[in-house]
Length: 170
Length: 170
Image (cartoon, rainbow over all chains, first blue to last red; front, side, top):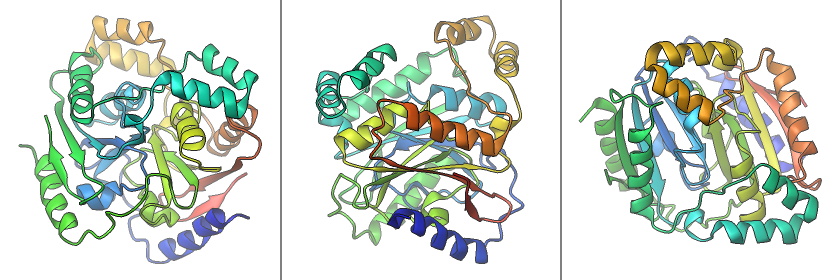
């Protein structure tokens, strides 16, 4: 087994030994969801103050609201959350390329069949050129979607990977 | 401001005060990614032993590999990860409904315009009826995709929300 798999097993043994949260209910007790980036430098529980059981945490490349829509609807309509805290971050990889670049990298590294699969899936990598504008645009997308009712509270934030601070943008 | 927003601000002040990881690089240092569910009862860093900077963490409703494909390609082809640790969990909400149920709930709660938006987006909620089979099927989807090269190590796990343990399935 590779290092990361052994890692999961040893961490799990240790975590389970002192685990006392087996009673928590499925719906998040604080009825909110955090949408943030998959970036390795973000620990949402610590950085945003989320206790186990409090909130849904959705993570994808760039904290894209469009990409997260399926999960957001399930969180709200099936599991009762009514607030979205959207957090993008400084130094995000999504600021560094455009769709055409990603398509070219896939073609070069993975070849023709992979490129065809990309096209078949009409895959949009959803990069963005400007951080704070991207936060505002994603919050706006959620506001405009019929699938996110007006009663849902929305806020947009930037986490600074350099300082560990999170500041509100919208 | 609502409670969760104050929460982010106070947690952030506290976290930043003792933050000393501003030097971490963008690419995950251990070159792997963890794909797990948005469920509020999972803390991936603690439960799966992920140190800050180690790994990408993708989270969506049900830990769906199909839904995560965009992020997975970015993680691997642009940021150099070469292993996927996929973790679904006991008591997952995705085991409790079918697409038709979700469509009906949206129609009832959000009305006709929202339902039309669901149809326009051809939204598949990606629920699954059986946990361990779903883990195996998602790992198989990744194996078969041209967009995930054979050199990528894959494993599938189940996290038990009742015990805090993570066990390997495939």
